Length: 175
Image (cartoon, rainbow, N blue to C red):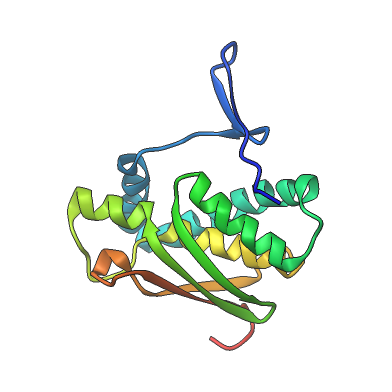
């Protein structure tokens, strides 16, 4: 089954929809400015808040998608999550899933590549949006609620690595 990606624009309300979900497509300037603001607000938990907002948002978007289009197999949910990440312009994602955790790789990352274009390389990962997306995907694939997974970016395109790598673990499980 091909992942559904139906875009429409409501001219009367000036809203864009993807699969009947309100959607805003942002350039890398917008995404990297939000990321930079999160880093500037580190003392208030800015990076964690940005990741959590992404997790909560995409948990709902993907859950509705799974209810509408997917039969429910874990493999199908993971494939759709990988496709959806690319279709909404966030990058290229490959996920290895297990209920206790797993890993993911990004060969391309809208956030990382935009950050490099805007400010150059850093010594630390900045893809908090990717972290949140992966936490949502793992929660849904495992049939759990938001907030059940920890995501750590162990290698990052923004630091000069050829791809970004993430390790995903259950909260309360091994770190």
